[in-house]
Image (cartoon, rainbow, N blue to C red; front, side, top):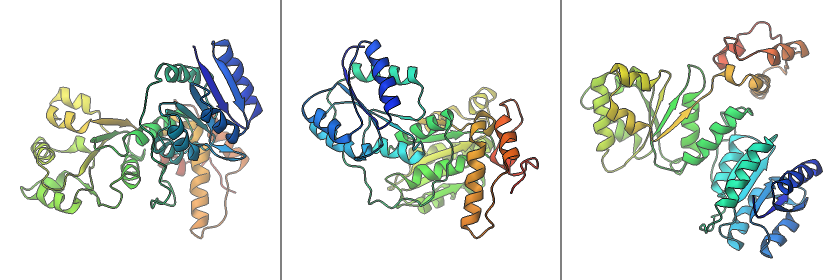
Length: 345
């Protein structure tokens, strides 16, 4: 790698590790624990790439992104954060960060992303500030810190304010409908209706017209598109091609493999290709076992906020949860709620 990297993080260990790794890779490195110092370096024209933490002693790294883009259009900024939620991914995307990685990050992965950022040094339009005044849900519907969930967050953030149709696939109980609703609730269409329909809502000839009248340019989600008959699939294709005056955003969920459905002839190719503008694969819980304790705490705390008794899992229950392996048949969130071995204090 060739270039100068500005590193801003209040953790001395992270600054040291990144400085050593980037220096060995051939980069010059300026590291600081202060956003003020980072912004001075940027204003002075130093650096080809910025790697910045979000929560710093003297400010928020995400809030500095518009200023960085204003002073140095085209300067790539890689955001790293221990606040690894979908909200962080959304804010990083809205502020036009070059990339976002949750902590703890994989050093080789960060090095590869930094190398790509150095290669991509080209002029970009100045960013608009992150919109803090927009009404957002109080409680985010998605919980997870594993790599698979972080990858899903980043993809959601990228497609959120596009008009691309979205196909959400995953096993029953993985939260496909929640993901569709979250994409709508954080998108530019948030003030418009979010309408969920099934094949039965589109069975008669007037079904598509009634549905489009309800959506009014918002988001239309077709639940379990793999179960819809070929006749109704044809109506959906025509509806997507001629939506009328108010064009909605189309989403669909499926727990079946639609690619296999193409081969079997149960899924129309024209419908599949129209819906799969962006494909989000939702991991099952057995693919993110490390999230079980986090999910359990989330539901117990929510029950407490709703007036329930304060409860927490015992140490033995947590040990059972973290000892679960990906080969165990834990396919959905409901499985954790029904596991008798996880005693509650």
